[in-house]
Length: 248
Ligand code: MLT
Image (tube, rainbow, N blue to C red; front, side, top):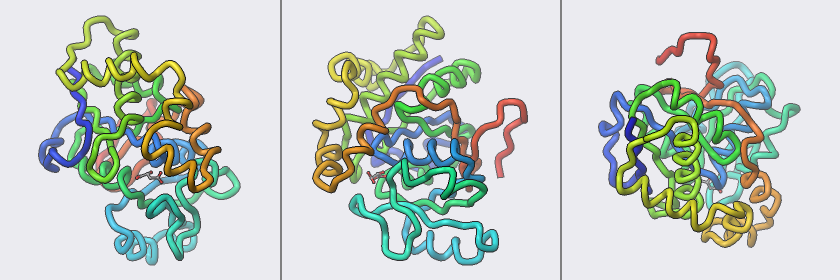
């Protein structure tokens, strides 16, 4: 099993992901939000690459059961029901809802990797469950860090390194690419105190400036959730391990 890390979506073409097993990481905050939404009973999260498309698809869908969620420049978008704080996606708000979701980097990274044979969403919150599932699949893995505006982000790379460590614990001798070795080294250097690391990243600082302190705390929590958001090419659903997976 070989694991490769892409530190940002910018250098990969959509077709690069065809037939691959991909894990998308956007620790702050899209991955953490999607995991929490599905864990709290949202039926589906439909990631989209533009706000215009979010508005267009939400109009005609699922008779009143659709919510528009996401952010632009960290803030809730005008006309959207919810922003991108994981805790906004509570049971009371999202249960049985279809959520059309746009975020600056995370939803776009998922859409970019849409041709993957298997696509999972990971953050610190569900990392151990993702590692366990990847080991079961036995495929080579591409870890796609959403990054920030097509640039490197430390928090996604440290999370990628932690995921590699977790996979290594469950199966000895994971083959690592140079970028995986680099991500693992970053995890060793910065992964001891995840909250502290998040507070010192560029995006973490921006979220703190905008009053999202609680989101950083939430996103720093390790393995509080075992939900596996699985993308079938159109929507993310919580993977039911008892049922065969179906791509649209
Ligand atoms: C993103 O996708 O860029 C993030 O989730 C941004 C944010 O923190 O809201």
